[in-house]
Length: 235
Image (cartoon, rainbow, N blue to C red; front, side, top):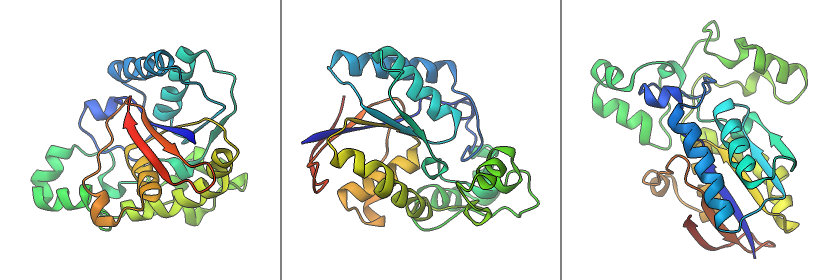
């Protein structure tokens, strides 16, 4: 048996402002920084340690990972970053206020965009500055061969997010678990829900009701060979 720990980044500045964030690279709020440190303190108190950590390429998740590892005294472990662990891309909703969006398109429509597994929000166009293909971070990843322009989403539903998370999990994360290593993944609500969906073999209908709170370590006890879930709980 091996333990895998998932942690959703602490509250971000845009969470605080009630804005759709997605791939927008915003900082943690003061509360989010506190949540990240408290997660590390809690894991240390419970006797947790890690051999390797994974995160997205967004700083709110990266900083959550770093602050937690700082409290654990494990800042020197290998850290891996991938756009495949980014938050779901919210398309044309990114940067908009959630309450104002509900007034514009109706509460029911915005609820469907936010909570359904297979209905993406309105898409961006490629001339929009919010499209990742127009941003230096992703241009650099494309130039490095780590992603392609086609990988830059115009919008995403949860199923789209799961499709990009799965190959990274299978190719990079699962081998570490199979090797018996203690793995920490610091990422985002929807990329983590995609992992939960895979581990627990949930249907799109079942994953809709799954919510992962910010800054609360979620522990999976897994069979290191089959990755079957033996137990799960929050610290």
